Amino acid sequence: MARLLSIDYGKKRTGIAVSDPLQIIANGLTTVETAKLFEFLEEYTRKEEVERIIVGLPKQMNNEPSENMKRVEPFVNRLRKLYPAIPVEYYDERFSSKLAHQAMIQGGLKKRDRQNKELVDEISATIILQGYMESKRL
Image (cartoon, rainbow, N blue to C red):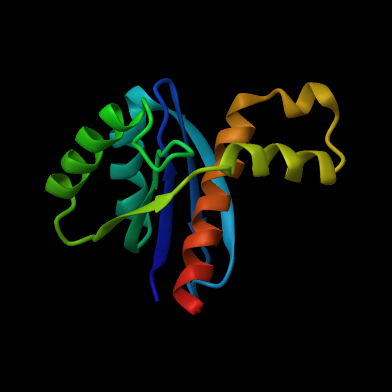
């Protein structure tokens, strides 16, 4: 089986997570400067087989698109053009940052480490991917 890749797209930084080849566990991979994201994806997809890309869907609590949607939608459109053989799906990312902070606290990270925005983005991408995989098992 190929991996699933999850993207927590941000204006400055983007968190990336991947599944194991059996698509059982989501693991944080890295955080990339958004300006270099397509470069990173080109290199990664050359080395690893990716079955599907999951992109965090930015929504507000009232189910309306959040401010970041105006950046995410063009990104996803470009992604679909560059990788037509890899399906791209959205998955609701509400609460992923909050859950990432809770996971860091439960993991015993010091306050200084919890302020590391790159780590928060990577963990958020992991939470998005894990949620997506769990939703498909139901």
